[in-house]
Amino acid sequence: MPDPRVTVVVITRNRREELLHTLDRLAELPERPAVTVVDNASTDGTADAVRELDPPVRLLTPGRNLGACGRNLAAREATTPYLAFCDDDSWWEPGSLSSAADLLDDHPTVATVTGRILVHRPDAPDGEPPTEDPVVTELRDSPLPRPGWLPGPALGSFLAAATVLRADAFRTAGGFSPRLWLGGEEELLAADLAAAGWWLVYAEELTVHHRPSLRRDSTTRRRQGLRNTLWFTWLRRPLPAAVRRTARLTATVPHDAVSVRAFAEAAAGLPWVLRERRPLPPAVERRFRLLDGPQQASTARRYVG
Picture 1 (spheres, rainbow, N blue to C red):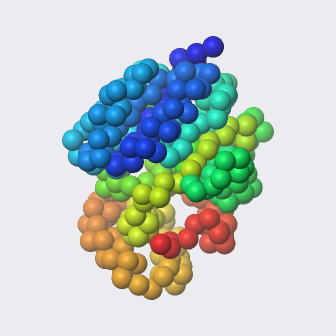
Picture 2 (picture 1 turned 135 degrees about the vertical axis):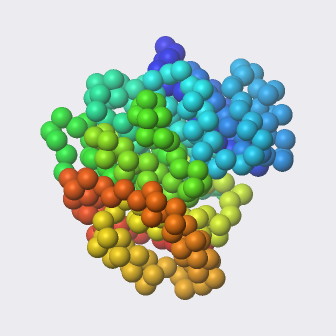
């Protein structure tokens, strides 16, 4: 039966074919969710292709590239209690959206549920099975303490394209920061949700499929991701933790022009960071401190490309 509790939000830019594949997969879901596409100023005919779809999906065209904040625009328009974020090269497995909505219905202090991610090689032959994204092990083995009633491992952050969120919590927390724009933008929002008393959860029974687009600028994403990590660290972590993480990044990221530019952009934002700095409450910071070691050892978090 159709499930009216979830709106799927897809942001896209210049990936028409990948987007159409994703929308086909979403149209096949038994939940038949409402779907909103935010076209971040594509120039490849994406918007026209979406307008021609049958059944139709809602299309928002802000006229400029909003990055991750395109999701904020869609969230303001949505009327369902839950939002399922989705990239233009990923899609939800049948039944996962209803399961996520059930979890959120049953646990009113949970703001996000993140699912297991299966990766398909873009050039894989027909029939080749997907493999589990390496980050899933980190989610499944999260070191954060959890109350007995929590329906899965507690998380310190989430992956937007594999997460269903409580719409009111997302909007109240302010959504994604326009400053961060895109690249690791989830970390700041996740910290603010935790500071407000919300729980973030990994749910093994939810599945998201990801077929990474070949149309991606990994160098730009690395620069933005490193910059945003530095900004988040100084916006929300106490001084000793911020110094340690900055020193660790300085020592471990590639020593090249991309990293230099990322650090320069982070430094240029220092006046804004100092104005907006709001360290996490001590109880939340203690939880986040438990993630420092696993993040440092992670094979799924590398500023390369």
